[in-house]
Length: 207
Image (cartoon, rainbow, N blue to C red; front, side):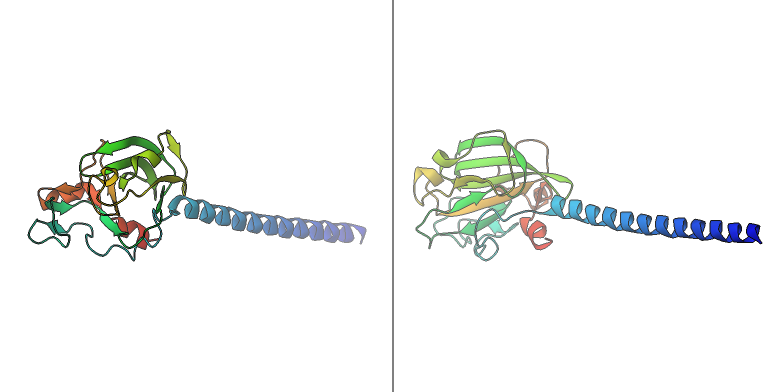
């Protein structure tokens, strides 16, 4: 009789231990899944480079063919297929702050013909590497340090018809280049060259 009681007692202890272990494993799995989701969310999280980013792309979207005759901007001095998107701020008199869309490393910061002030930052977005080109900024406001963090101010849009924008209107040219070299082109001559770039709206609409 005592052996039966002992056996029953040990069996109860064993069942209790297995049940406790299962609860621990279930909780641990849930915690790991939550952590993975948190990491994935952090990796894919980006911020828009300027306020009202999507709503203000009204004249030159990605890939549009621009010629002096057909351009929505007149007069027009550029031609070719547009490598990025133009975010229009001609109606805004106040300073327009430009932010880094993700953590990254500054590859170029300075003045370039056709842009005025421009900064190029290599970002890791959704586990892919892009060179982001932020054009038509006031050169005096550009950061020059190596590393930037997501949401950090990297400059302020330049004033229209000034050397800050190389005599262009007040807008942000934002482009994402998938190559490994430093490429600041705002336009390419033939359409198939656009394969070296990605439409930024794909990135932002997939958030």
